Length: 377
Ligand code: NAD
Ligand code: MG
Image (cartoon, rainbow, N blue to C red; front, side, top):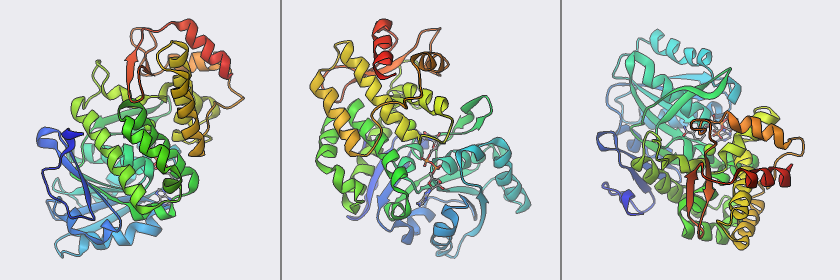
């Protein structure tokens, strides 16, 4: 975990992870009550104006806290725009609300767009910032586990298109990510578990000791123990930062693609059940079980590891099999449209070797995939 050694020193109660991307590098601050420490944000904001983008659920709880953090220094002018809540509003027409507000307020190129919310708000705000006057500064204040451990880090931004999820977007890195773990106090249990699914993923693809820590600490995480949460977020961000630093734009070598363990199966579940019925992390959890099952059938992992994966996901109260309504044929056709299909061959992230190792490959026996699908469907 050396690549994430932080060049900037943080105080004892603030954890810091450095995302190393040359002149686009940035810090992630993690800790309880960080929205009370506005200077952490303000020191990364150049220019005089900030547009906070949030939604109608998060705004009433955290907007004033965030606005105060920005106003405390007496230097900034702060406006806000409140979007409707939900994945179905992650669209280009809703994004226009952000640009309308910025133009109405005559915001110039020195403006900073601040995302206050979960992954939907973060992805939309980042894309809005990438496009507004060809690019204004962007900062992230993620308020879901999913956003704190995954979506706020790495610069993938965008919106959905009627023909596909996240199909319109840009790579656009934030200047800073401020994770105030106190914001998780109001997060619904299901959203908490959904984020934990991505946390478990980091252990599986590249961090065996973290997986073991999760096995020892799952109940503390589910109880939102502040220390356990902060550690899990930090360790997840370190893993994500290392992967993104190695392969920012998801090259064909597939280093960044390993972050998609369980996602090809998972996307099929999300589409097959209708978006929003299963949360993303729930679909990924079942997808990781299916990927582990296939890995086991290929002889790439042993049964003991497969059982550990299923047991940990179950303890996190995540689904460990796809919905009964889905058929193997449905999986086959939905998985064929996945972005990772390369020249007609389905590419999957599969586990191979001891805990913490995976491969991104199209070289597996398709008959074994049929066995997996028939086993679960
Ligand atoms: P979300 O943004 O929809 O948030 C989940 C729900 O929790 C929403 O209703 C939201 O309003 C509410 N909420 C947020 N913070 C809250 C808080 N502190 N207290 C109470 N309620 C709160 O969903 P998500 O899981 O955070 O993110 C999913 C989105 O992120 C998807 O659109 C997905 O495509 C995207 N994503 C992007 C990346 C990336 O790399 N950019 C990675 C993973 C996911
Ligand atoms: Mg994901």
